[in-house]
Image 1 (cartoon, helix red, strand yellow):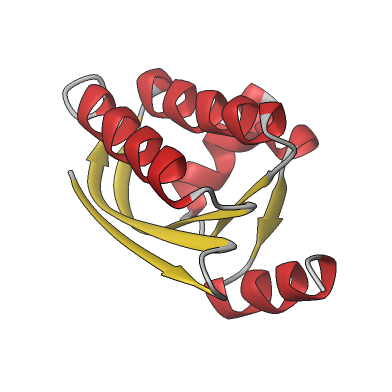
Image 2 (tube, rainbow, N blue to C red; image 1 turned 90 degrees about the vertical axis):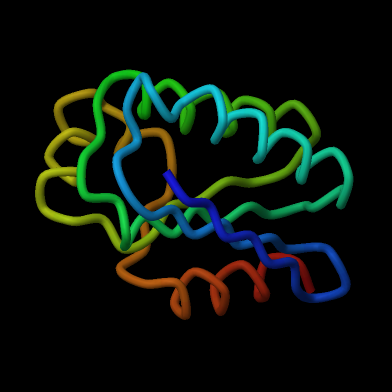
Length: 118
């Protein structure tokens, strides 16, 4: 699993783009990478861009839910974007779509979050 991370808006917003399979093999690495970046940059908003995720299992859902809770604990926000149909279905089956915001693409999420952080 490859993770690309960029910060923007003077560090207030971070976009993490994931590529590959987010399964039990990749979960620990992704979790650690995201946690280190959240702590180092002190971001208010985390956007998980899942456009490159080709497969996700319950371990992947756990990584996302854990980062959601981590952002909530610091009064931040986590949103996800660009879900493929299989990943979207997994979000619906797990109920994650009811607790976190999902945007169709990264640009829509950035625009919405910039409005919130003004």
